[in-house]
Image 1: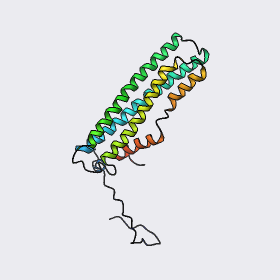
Image 2: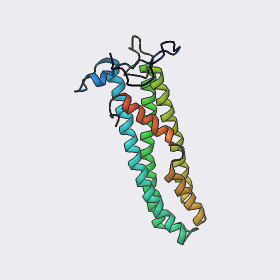
Image 3: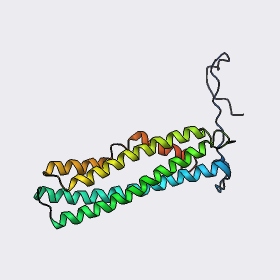
Length: 203
């Protein structure tokens, strides 16, 4: 039983609200993180999601650097398709091919979590607050955002070399760089999964 909070005003016993009970996370109960069964499966999928996002971020940053070079070329010769421009475009194509693999992994992970949420006899919540259906909902939200962002990357690749002005090239480069579909809400949900599964501790 927790200690009574110090207060000058006694707590009223007629409160109609029920207290919230937080269940202890299986991950927290195992310092070695040797989870078994559904919690281990779910925890591993969340780790795969995080690693895939890290891989995506590395390719995204590489693409930003390439697009900076393309924008510089377009500023000087906006209507010319030079061998140097072709080389940078090929490099960007390689980056987008890498992002396509990340996109496929997002889809795979989402399907794995959906299958996980349908397993019978899952202890709810899986860790300490989220039920399996809610974890699947969060995964869908995150993966859908990256799906939209992948389409942005494809659009930039298809159009940047054919841009006819400096402003158009700069717009496409900014469109890639800012990742408007990866909102603060997406980042928050990613962090919530990491904390929920004890991959990241609350500071």
